[in-house]
Amino acid sequence: MSVTFDVNFAPSAALNGETAIALKLADGPAPAAASAVDPAGVYAKAAEVARFKAKSMGVLDIIAPQGSPVDRLLVVGLGKGADLTAHDWLRAGGIAASRLGKATSAAIFLDAPGLTVTGEQAADFALGLHLRGYAFDAYKTKKKDEDDKPAEKTVKVTIVTTAASAATAAYTAAKAVAEGVCLARDLVNEPANVLGPVEFAARARALESLGVEVEILTEKEMGELGMGALLGVSQGSVRPPRLAIMRWNGGKNEKPLAFIGKGVVFDTGGISIKPAAGMEEMKGDMGGAAAVTGLMHVLAARKAKANVIGIIGLVENMPDGNAQRPGDIVTSMSGQTIEVINTDAEGRLVLCDALWYCKERFKPEFMVNLATLTGAIMVALGSVHAGLFSNDDALSARLTEAGLATDEKLWRMPLGKDYDKMIDSKFADMKNTGGRYAGSITAAHFLKRFVGDTPWAHLDIAGTAMSSPSNEINQSWASGFGVRLLDQLVRTNYES
Ligand code: BES
Ligand code: MN
Ligand code: ZN
Image (cartoon, rainbow, N blue to C red; front, side, top):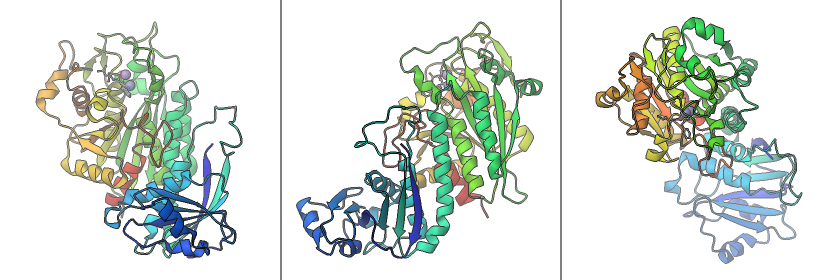
């Protein structure tokens, strides 16, 4: 069950909570909070017996003795002060959330001796709590034994810090980020029978309540625009495609920033059908669209001072009597023709029309697209980095920087004309695959043919959007990858 945290920040807390949490640096003295909640001095003994060294994210769990104002004291290690990163605050929050057990209230003492916490760091800690509290189990009707599973619940958390007022201010944005990431996770986790293109578009439409302008294009409208590449993918499905355009106008007159997402609600491969083993994971082939939707939620919820467009191409890739065939030639909105060699290389066909449409209609400052585009990126980078492909060094550097700050890491991959010519076709302007070698790069080159001179970056998130190892801030199959990254990109570079 998801756990909701009702968070407030205060310079001190009345201790009648069930649980207290304190932090400790490996190279710092015992937490001051320990003496406050621990009149009997149990901490020192417990730390010695457990050989607690306050290694990064190590936890000492002490049941408080009679006479203590709390039932339990958890001490979370932060490692050496010099090694502490911005992302460690999220991780520490995640660790705290994971150790609260059945507590319904907690006091968390962030200021440790030798450590003055900023409002930003305290808000990040709270973000870590929320992200760790996420679970996707709405379809489990049989609840486990009361003892090993908490019921859906709210935990009241007081985060004690001298930076309480700065933290309260920063928390508005942190809360927005938590919601956006959890929205993206929900969309990716949701099975495809529940979340088709129309249903996904309705989830985008729901952002109107936050002040996002939303337009949804139908199949007929996309036909009139000439989006033959996107429509070719969807023609084997009984479920009609949608293109959702979300606009957040929080800036002045500057050109909009544009984010474009691949939203294949299920990818069977089409006529070039995928093997059965593991095919269920292809319900997550809309991770790019989910990240864009989650990002738009964040920007609107925190009233970002920027003009931002989110465009998501929503289709289902199915084999059918009416499905497109290998060898078919489709005409994209740009007028360029494409020979479909492999119907399983469908993401690029969806994105090429969405990118062209975005560029022509909005003339954006830049375009960043996100897509679970290739299995090959997982071969290259695993689930540690997403692949970054770009025609613009400045944009690329900013993205890489945002990746390091949020721990949603990117690794830049090469582009070049020798790769580009691998997708030239005998029969059309290009083909949709360039063969086995350099598969992620040729996929990127395909997209690049639809962006013109617009600064552009493509993030291949096939290895990071889902099925990555769980960690301090995520235990769910879907990670919500990209939401925090792109929020950071916008926040640090494009807001006045
Ligand atoms: N959606 C897949 C890529 C993918 C694979 C995402 C595994 C997440 C996990 C994409 O549409 C695809 O099928 N790509 C093919 C391209 C090939 C046919 C050129 C691939 O990677 O095998
Ligand atoms: Mn595919
Ligand atoms: Zn796909």
